[in-house]
Amino acid sequence: MEIDPAATASPPTPTPNSPSSALSQILSQNFDADIVPCVLTLIKLLNNIISTNPRDDIKGRRVRCINLDNAAFDSKVGRVTGGVDFLLSCGFERQQQKQLSVVSGSSSKTDCIELREEKESTELLVEARRLLAHKAVTVLGVSGNDVPAFRDPPPRVELTSSVAAAAATSSSRSGGNTTGTTSSKTFDPYKSHSYNAQAAAVGAPNPNSVLPTEDPTAAGGDNYVSRTERELNALKNKQERLERKMQKLGPGGRALAAFLPGSVGAVSTLRDASVGSTSSGADGGGRGDGSLLAARMKRMEEERKKREEGGFTTRAMRDLESMKKAKVYTHATLRIGFADGTWITAKFLPSETVNTVREVLIEECFRADIAPGLDFDLYVAPPRRILDRGKRLDAEGLVPAARVHVSWKVGGAPPSPPAGSGSESRPGSYLREELFGTSAQVGGADYNAAAFPDAKKLVEDTCKSSGKKRGAAEGANGGGGGAAASAESREDALVARMLGKKSGLLGRKGSSASSGDKKSGSGKPKW
Image (cartoon, rainbow, N blue to C red; front, top):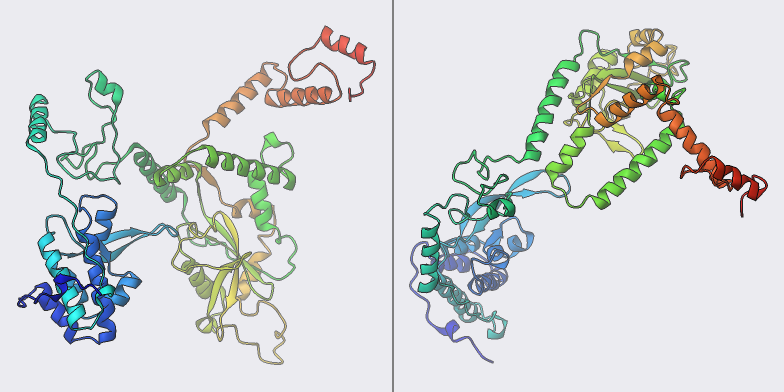
């Protein structure tokens, strides 16, 4: 059995805030079952740091930054008294880093310790590693074969005199101007960097320069905002202005109304309103289920092709694309259903939270004598998903209209009416009577038009609007009815081609079509 010679050497005299004092704390304040894995883990950590270059962007930085919330590290080193202090005595410093969640997209701060290059001392790390190995063998009784083998540090890369002279010559030729170069500050891979080769070839300044500069407001500074982010911020500001202008609910603006199960004339309130709002005169008599399904399938296919052929995009680019398609609604119409078949319709602002909906139900819908004892959750289905009380309605996907269900909690359901009161089996006995009187006045088409919110796009679709204007102009000038006539003629040509006629999509008409008819003898397909 071979024993590391460094492990048998005598340890140095303990000094305050030194690795030896931290190790003495580990040995005196913990059980042996916890000390052994802690010491071996510290040896592995020091081996990885000693054997790697601190300037290595991948492995060198990874081993020099330790997340204190890591479960493996916490179980072996973090929960051992003096374990983290030993690393701090080797040059590590406590820091907080932002961590981005891939699932939710939110960022959070995590505690970590990091060994910076200017604080790193190879001699101190080697001495701390030797001290750990000595205590592991002589005090803890660990076999020399179980101690991780020592790995030599990599050679340091130093600038030779010739390289330094070449760098000084290059700097003197450029006139000492270092603006726009990355030598003045560390390169940040999470910032945008651009180099325009065409501008550099002719000696012109870079028009898209986003290189790091000392000015935080200039391109490449700490406060630099890209073009995509500027457009996104402009749309967000426009959305806020439209929301302040459009989203207002005055006194009585909730339009609260309660309906009993099987109410006639009000069952299809949200459905009729939504279908009516999407229909247009160009579609002929409105849009049915078939046309809506076809439009949805076409939109999904276009989105799939765009994802496959669009390449890589940043989060700001995806947010900008969604904002261009977004609409601002005046309000959100909710249909809130109960277990006995009773339901309520009400208007809410998209910026209001789910908790506001609960408060309106408790304060304005339930009877005052039983409202304080009611407790419930709001959910949507299918699939069943409990709504978060702290989230906005637009964040929960309840805009412009949605159906929400009430789920009574254990002990929070309405009490049963007393026997002999005549309301034992009447649904909706827990709601205020005046709400049912309001429902008799809002069951028609006028209520549908008023209940479904008005919308305004953040970015107008110029292509569609120009196409509609061009089609209308062609129809007014006798152009065969514009786009509708063109689509009809193409459909006729397609049918003729399927029947075997030569006149078709390629526009061969006249004599060729007549000769084709003579050759075929009849309008039967060639096959």
